[in-house]
Amino acid sequence: MHKILLLAYRWQNYSFFLINTINLIILLKKNTYILAIESSCDDTSAAVVKDGIVICNITANQDVHRQYGGVVPELASRQHLLNIIPVIDASLQAAGITISDIDAIAFTKGPGLLGSLIVGVSVAKALALCLDLPMIEVHHMHAHVLAHFTSEQKPPFPFLCLTVSGGHTQIVLVNGYTEMEVLGNSLDDAAGEAFDKTGKMLGLDYPAGPIIDQLSIQGSAIFPFPEPQVAGLNFSFSGLKTSILHFLQKGIASNPDFIKENLNDICCSVQTSIVDILINKIIKASKITGIKSIGIAGGVSANSHLRKRLIETGNSMGWKTYIPAFEFCTDNAGMIGIAGYYKYLNGEFANQMVTPLSRMAF
Ligand SMILES: Nc1ncnc2c1ncn2[C@@H]1O[C@H](COP(=O)(O)OP(=O)(O)OP(=O)(O)O)[C@@H](O)[C@H]1O
Ligand SMILES: [Mg+2]
Image (cartoon, rainbow, N blue to C red; front, side, top):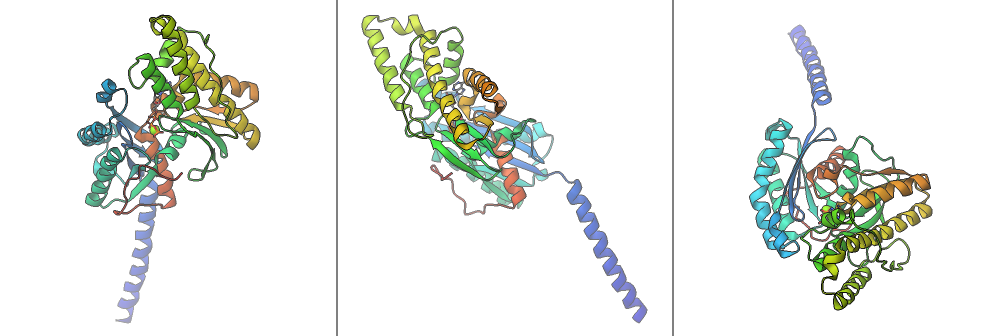
C-alpha cells in the first residue's frame, strides 16, 4: 500500500511537471492574435495583429458624407452598423484564421463621435462575451502615435510625435508604448479641419485634404497668409481660416472667377502655410526637449508636402525622422491592434462595464 501511494505521489509530481512543461511549450509556441476594431468617425476598420505585427487591416470608407461637405454623425453610425460585421469577416479571412483563433479584442473607446464609437464598442463587448475573450480599450490618439510601430523602422523612446488629424493637432512626447504626454495642442481648429474648411470655401469635396494636396502639385505658393503667433507649443488655425475667407471674398469681389482661375495656386499657398506652422512648432519642440527622433502621425501626415518638409527639415537639423505608411496615417484598426497588443502584454484589460467616450483625457 505504501509503495502504491509513493508511486502515485511520484506520478502526480511527474504529471504536474509534464503538464506545466507542455503549457510552457504551448505558451511559447502559440501566437497571440488580437482582433482590433476602429469606428471612431466615418471609417469602419478591422485588423488582425499577430504578436505585435499587423497581418491585415481592412477599412470600409463612407462615401455618403461627401455630398454634405462633412461627416453627418447619424449617417456615420448607421453605416458602421452595415459595415462592421462584413469588415471583421473580411479581416479574419485575409489573416487566414477563424474567430476561435483570436486571443483578445481591442477596440477604440474614444475620443470620437459617440454614435460611431457605440457600434465598435458594442460589437467588441458582444464578441468578448460570447467567446469569453479579454477586451482591451484603446485611446484613438495613442493609437495614431503607435501607428509608427506598424512599420519595420520603429522610432526609439523617447521620441516626439506631431499628430495631425481631422480633430487634433498635438505634439506628443512619447516615452513608451503606454507613456505619452501632450506638450502642445490646438487651441481651436485642427490642421485637418483647416484643410477641410478651406476645401469647403473653394467648393471642393469632403475630405478636402487629399484634394488640396493633389491640386497643389500644379500650383505655386504665391499668396502669403500670416502665421498665427501662439505661445509655447500650442497651435491655432482659426485665424488662418478667417484670413483665407477674407482673401477669397476680396478676390471674388474683383473677379467672380478668381477661385477657378487660381485654384492650384490658392491650394498650394494654403497647404504651404499650414505645413509651415506645423514644421516651425516641431522644430521648437525639438529645441526645447533636445529630442531628435521626430515622427508624424494622423490623417494629415499623409500630406505629401508635410512628408517632404519633415524629411528636408530632419536632414538640416540632424534629426532621425519617422513617417508611417499611408494606410496607417488615416483612421485604421491596425494602429488600434498595435496599441492593444502592448496593453495586452501589460495585462491591462477592460470589462463588460466599459462605455465609449466622445471626449477622453489623453
Ligand atoms: N493628403 C492629405 N493632405 C492633407 N490632409 C489630409 C490628407 N489626407 C487626409 N487628410 C486629412 O486627414 C483628416 C482625417 O484624418 P483622420 O482620419 O486621422 O482624422 P479623424 O480620425 O477624423 O480625427 P481624429 O483622429 O482627430 O479623431 C481629414 O481632415 C483629411 O482632410
Ligand atoms: Mg483619427
